Image 1 (tube, rainbow, N blue to C red):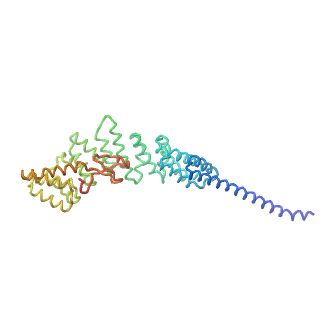
Image 2 (image 1 turned 90 degrees about the horizontal axis):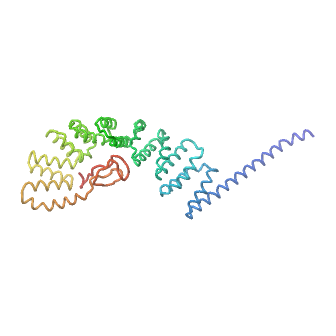
Image 3 (image 1 turned 60 degrees about the vertical axis):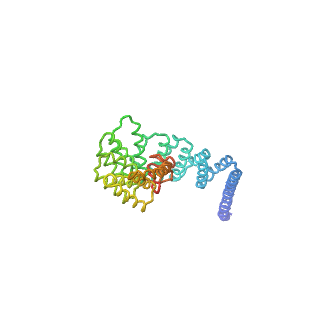
Length: 378
């Protein structure tokens, strides 16, 4: 009898394991069926434009199934693009409460910060982004989003605390933004001096504005050598800015030879319209109107330009009174045409304007609004 009992024990154990597995499988199937019902119900609400009910239904699934995070992120981003920031915030806040791996949790945190920014909740967005600026993956994007907050709130002084982090990145756009925003902070101070501008110009050589502002301050204080050095650096490294830089250089007491060499290089190597116009004026003054006219005709054949044509009309009118009378009406038409044309264009988004902006009003990028080139350009 005892031997029979020992023989039946393995059978009983196997039966218990089999029944237990069937019970677990049954619970799993029941749970999956519940998820499927909730998901189907949520999608049905979405299809029938009942978005609030759809969100409630789909958010319930997060407590059961957290493996579909990417689906929820896509849905929240869709709501944000549509301008439904409150719905995006609700989804991202629910995701933010889950215990997830660090990279996934940080991505959700960043998305939630963008929701808050879009909704105008800048303080909440800033708190989330501050914790992400040192992230090896999201640090650069978090800094850019933080800078967008400081631009929106005009809290320019806050950017200085991120100087070290910005300099550790390889982003030139972040460095240019850092330089420009520190200059905005300097403008709010009652005392103005060249020292902070000198420091910024040295620390951020890729940025145009520090040297531009330094040159203007130096000219105001009659430090022409300092202004000349800063402006020549801009012309050498960013010749597309020559239209705005050359008028300032004319105040820097360059010799005739220096001025001629500079204009010749910009006109012949960079094909800068403003330099060609100024060089034609120099030739008319130091040589002859005929030489200036021939120079403009040669340039017009190589590079059609309304502004070069305008300058040619002016020189021909100066040569004789009959020419002035015949060409005055043509010059008026050309002037009227140019008065309506944009002077600057954003190389990033294409925004056009007659007024210069250091920060593009359209794409919110620093130093992308530059003098226009082409047939109407300068």
